[in-house]
Length: 245
Image (cartoon, rainbow, N blue to C red; front, side, top):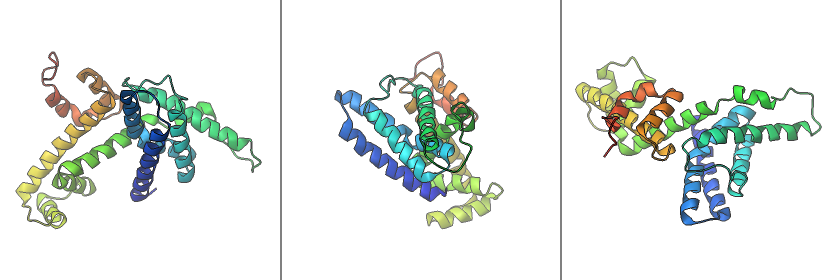
């Protein structure tokens, strides 16, 4: 799937989820806000995971909407939005969702085909990978919002890792519409790396509902993101023995 098509589908799903939640939501204002925030946060990861399991964008979108409907009508009451590891519960729920889909297909007359068994879905599709991709995508969006120059510099470095500073400066000059020297390009790139790492740590921390630094570090390690964020994590809480002010 092309990045633009993925972005359009995710935007549509997010909008539909928000409307669905506000139609079906019950409970006090704080609880409703927490659940709505939870749905918005995970909708991209849910779609990516389901897409990897069914290999059909239209079916994946349909199942993603089905998950949201199950959620807002209370099928997942045992899920607590205040717990940082909601994604562990979410992963199991999605395995059941996709398994139900394949069972419905098997019950219909169709040519002989091999469908993935429930026991193999977890190994075939890694929800951690889907969640990791969602966190990185959110971080890129945040970087573009915070500083378009940093975003452009880092994207160029990833796309053209062997560019010398002079070539990077020329590309940035063209992209930003203003002169950028080689020295400025190097400095911009250095700051972009640092800002991206800070924003990524912020995204993970937000998903864990203000968890302590130790839990954030554990999550980053499990998602294979710690190697990019170790310095940023230290900046967030320079003295682990003391809470951040």
